[in-house]
Image (cartoon, rainbow, N blue to C red; front, side):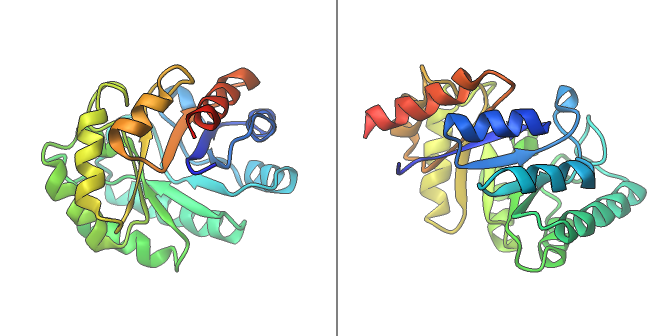
Length: 220
């Protein structure tokens, strides 16, 4: 399948369900009720031992604002070290400055600290004002992938903006659509935006991810 499906999960059970449904990669979090925080080392180990697909680990100390205090940034550095020590295939983070713009210096620092492990910038991107400038900042920082709905409430509503981001990226960073991606709309999102990756919540219903995977196969 030419379009990769990443499933967002917060437990071992959800991880197994997502892999069984055909997900190609996992984003592993805790506390998805607040948008996701860093999972425990024990959960990372359990999931990595149980699945055969890559596991991206969320690095986020709390829900809420993406503007972080020095103490929170220190916690994120420790969490990054922990995720790498437990063999995360990639990490997911988002850091904004007090103006709700990409904090380019801090993001570049975390890319360096990741020591070649791919870094995804998450949907913190959707609250910034100047997405063109923000995307350039992420590219310059060495971020591998951007998860976004194009600044809209859902990926289908943001498909036009996603297409602009894909065009601007010119292959320098992967644009991954997230935000109410479903089997009923994934084909249109991918076609309109020219995407190669999509992201969806897994939960414990195998049909949720399976419907996306099946829709993409039918579209080929």
